[in-house]
Length: 284
Image: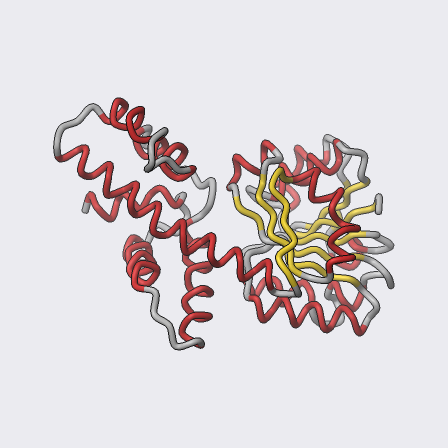
């Protein structure tokens, strides 16, 4: 599986593509805007102006786009991945998307004698750059085993989660946990500011105790540094929380913290900032 076509090369996708290239894979990419990926082309990565050309004769086709509607657009239809991938190729979608859509891709791919895995990731841009992503994989276990060497290039925590859609379901649990955690980080900082604490000392005290978390260490420090650049966009987190909420509503279950944090983010109208900008909700 040496030839890879990668669709969607944004904040996370760019370092992932570099890791694949640096580990000996021949990588072709498709993006809507060539100018945004010119540094990758200087490193020998091949750009195509259509999905059909990008995936032609590729052993593996990877995707990482923004929204479920984008996933549908690139996978289905006469110009889509499923219709144009060569027989026997492997499709891996890293997008955080709908579990139902992952199953739909799996079913349509099987009809074309293609393998498919849903493999959403966690770890943000830092994890992508450092190849330390957590990758949650749904699909057939033997296909997962074949793809495992690829995942090891991109992440440090790789788990087979179960049948098609299972990776997406577990990613939803990850996003639900983050929702409560980032809100807790913002509330702790708000308390510290109100009490006129030295916030750097506060962080040293709590980051390595029972309250310690990735969100506190990374996004908590980003907040103190007034750095709201997107390691993960608010707009994409809102999308993820909406998917999780819809799944729970279908089951007749209401998750109060998830619902509250979703409303907090929606009220900000700061979709292009990183998720740490939730602190602005408390500063209003």
